[in-house]
Length: 141
Image 1: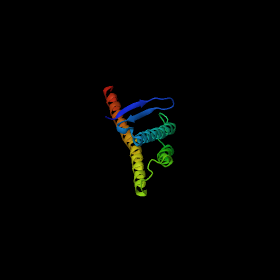
Image 2: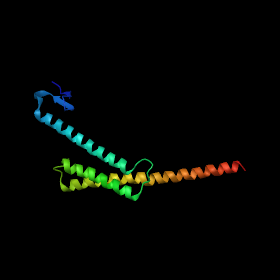
Image 3: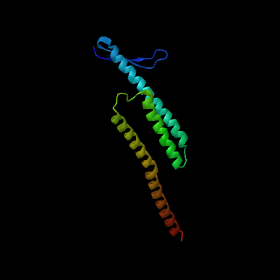
Image 4: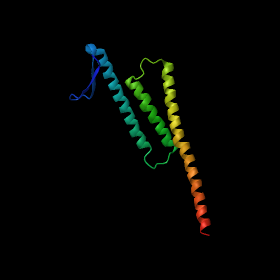
């Protein structure tokens, strides 16, 4: 008999159940664990997204203070979530440090993209606007 994934929409429960050869209770526990981990990851990402929206409202300037708040919020949410929910329990110390280094690398690359690339793009647009304005002035003479 093949594995059969069924939607479980009983009151207060949302997710999937699995039935297969022997209806393995261990497999059902794994599926439940994955669901609760995904729910927690989603919750932490949602909290961070709300914090990020508060730190950087639309049309707000990217200041050093906002950037440091954003960095602190990201670390608090993701490192704190990992510690609180035990996402990496059993990972050796060097593995945890490596994961933290990847988090910091990702945050640094996002900051670089927002800060430097957008500034370079703005500078290019400013140059092109000035060239266009000069051309218009020359045509009207």
